[in-house]
Image 1 (cartoon, rainbow, N blue to C red):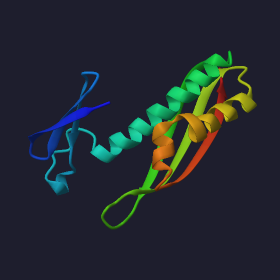
Image 2: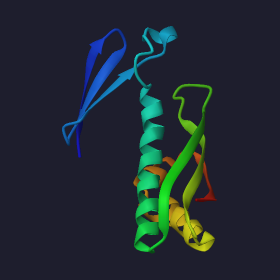
Image 3: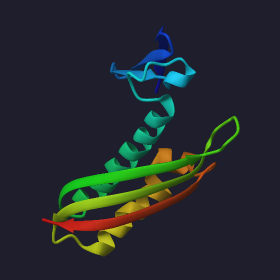
Image 4: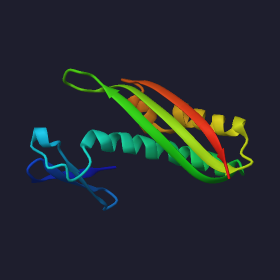
Length: 138
């Protein structure tokens, strides 16, 4: 896996992923950015949410659950001093479907957090992590 990040202008950068996709990033205005794209640390959280959601959806589909949507809110706290690492990350999943079994949703979230989601397990080495969930019936 690889990625190339190039300085664009000001404090904006463009990442080109190994799969050929481009992702813009920009800094906050107080740091010289123009607020035209997500901050790099926001993308780290987005990647975490995507990785964990991928696992949850796949596990529930394999378990023959009638899932129609999965959303995860990822909220983080950072250290006050440099390096401003994440010190706490809370993930809350809302899984929507028909007749979803709570035990299977809980199992999917747990398996993602403890076994499959590389991002969650890696970030959990420096940040306290919580994973909560709820079911929304359609």
